[in-house]
Length: 312
Ligand SMILES: [Fe+2]
Image (cartoon, rainbow, N blue to C red; front, top):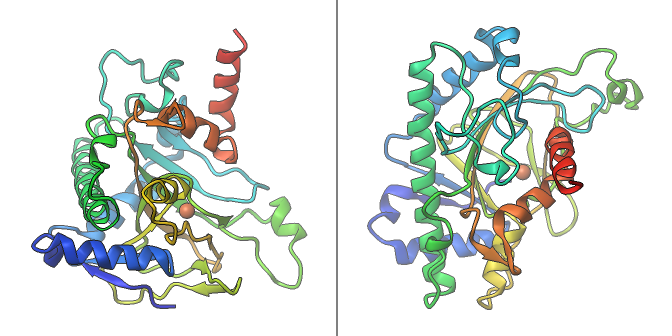
């Protein structure tokens, strides 16, 4: 299925029209394609993504995994989502030990980097900044269309928890329990059915197919991306609630999944998120994120650390 598109460069000149287009897309189908983003370079992004997962040795990647929310997470065989992840945030805190989860604010941990990788680090820092800027503009334009009297942007800045996640979906090993139990040639999914929990997801998915979204009729449809350069954008449950609090109840966090097409696949979502201290439901946003992450196998280790903290 074809998702509606937004011309980003033109929107910079006319945020009002952009807001209406974004609102329309998030009402139905709940996904938007953002194109014509100045200096967005998916070829460079794919080059560095491949470099991290396929050029860097397994040993070097595995050095970067003491904290499951920053750095590297290996694929877990037999689980519903089979992928390797490298995750970075905006925090470069010299006082924060990179090999320990910060018990107070575990989502503000400092980043972990491979050795001797200044070019990679510089690319990531710039790309994180670029995605933060695109996310802030999309939010501002949507804010204008939904709730002129409220300033949503100040919930997100400064010190946003936004994260950049490099993902590699390798083939499942032949003895993978899910692969062995799959029937009639139906392969297990790369990434299982879910709706996003947060605010705005900006996805670089390159030329890969496999992303499917669920229609109102409960049918799975392939998202058509061939030949399009830009970002697939969707909203999560928290953004839906933020809109609802201003009377906009038609936007939705559409369910999606990633089919396994029998080949390696890379993608890079950027999760545009508020700052830790932004209050939602009387709780700091950071605490709500930790609750939501309990549903994901990738964060088992983080939750063991949090549970140990809370039992003290
Ligand atoms: Fe998602």
